Length: 127
Image 1 (cartoon, rainbow, N blue to C red):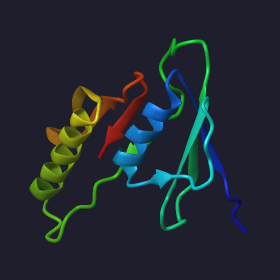
Image 2 (spheres, helix red, strand yellow; image 1 turned 135 degrees about the horizontal axis):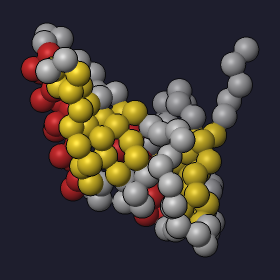
Image 3 (cartoon, helix red, strand yellow; image 1 turned 90 degrees about the horizontal axis):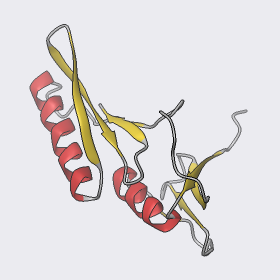
């Protein structure tokens, strides 16, 4: 039997980070969790793990050793150009939510994914 688990994250502003990641992943605030120095979001369907954010005094100092990859569905036709368009649209929406684009990644001349930073500089990818 698989274990239920929560991804715990340090943050300077846990509520801002929770709002960003809820938007990015389609999550909602965890019902009943109301802490000034912490925030938690959950998958509204109960399928994915909870993600908690706890206020810490120190800032981020190095590259993440683990990061989230947001996987965009391929689309109805499954065409590479349709998937690329979906990735770019998701990346653009995340920029409007506070993320920054670091670079686009290609392999063998074919577009693969977008590397981004969340509002506190944590790396993640949209693929």
